[in-house]
Image (cartoon, rainbow over all chains, first blue to last red; front, side):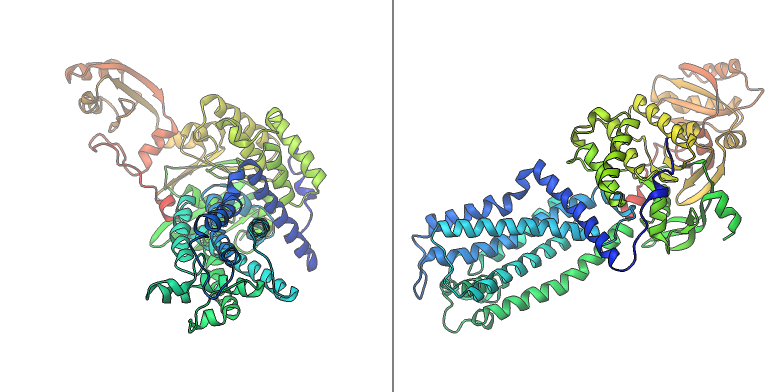
Length: 283
Length: 335
């Protein structure tokens, strides 16, 4: 075999801006790997594609008739903000599972032993996951429009609404990344995500206005970040928010509270995820 | 570190140690692997083989000591080390949801080879490893042997001068194992330095120029397979019985005429003991008959590395000990 022929001609690591180009190229190669996985197992995308459509239809047509929006407004218009947040929250599962799967196999050793840019693996992973989130957002917007949701705010506010959706999506992906790096197996990630996200999205204003909740639950719901996020999206898109009088501060100022929640979670979770990742790959 | 040894030796380690929590997975590990030679790291699960490989391939940082691969320090110049090595670790290091060809292309791209070169190199390697017909198939549909060959191909993408293989033939059937051995011999013939770990003593015997025996994180012996055999074992007498109840009495009888203590293999239902020039099989048969042992087969054979290992490492299945204790997998637990 022709030993050394290729090694001798391996491109030398560039300095300065060239390094960024290498990082981008490596990350893109690894993101394409995730896309290849989706081609083989399209079910991987169910949680961000079919599931939100299912929730939109279930709540719009099964419960929609019996849930009234206090202060007036159409329930279908109210609902979509909640479903968007729920889908973004469940979006932590995909990145968690794919990371835990890689870390449990030898392929991560292969990547770590290559002379590729060090952060490329994680950046490629985040790129692929964010693409899945973009797809989910598009699907929700379309299914929302079909059931009677619409944007009735100014274009600038609507733009801010999408900006917030991206920010929440990134927060959820980072949260999932941390869980994926720390969990022992892909199944564990699924368990953790399910147990955390399900109650959080139900004890909130996701599907029903908090005003109708019994004391105790209502306070939990008012301080739940999910509620702030849903209320902020509804506000920015000009949908009914059904925030009761005298609600807690985060619901009175949902946009500020939402950005603060995202910033706080990212600031906590990002270093934890990076440290755990470094320990597991080069411990 | 001595400059001369760095040019003549592809891998040099001095006093390497790795501690996980309270446990030392590896300690006082010294190594000098001449360029173009094959080193076998031999030991049971948890002996420290994988830890040594992980440090030398920059996947783990040493707690103490230093190591250089082709002159580059594994801790301070890890990027340069990575350009010089190929690694195939124990678990599958290829992507099951991609085709063999796209796996190799992806790795070529991560070595920053231009797209065309990466594609070409992938095709070249598939052909060299007899996988050209399987190149477009998903790796999850490969047989164990094919997957291992693809693993090997993946670590050869950049034709690295130093290759690390962590238990390359574990789980392979004898035919695939022989095929892989032939491939490795070809590689070494082309000048590649090879470091492999194995639990199969025959494998080290077949491939390695030098062997390092590890036990509980420490080197217990080094030398060529022939030297180790000469030092730690001459000929052996093997007595095979039909029933486990006969193992104890057979060992007792054998020790009366053999040149050392007997070892029991409960799974294989046999007992072995060192033989000297004067040990005669007829005496062994008589001793067995006196002990009332129904022996099924009695023979002499050359010592294998297994015997060397038995005589060197902590007692695992001595005549006096009970069933072999399950080997605690410290490495895995610690990682």
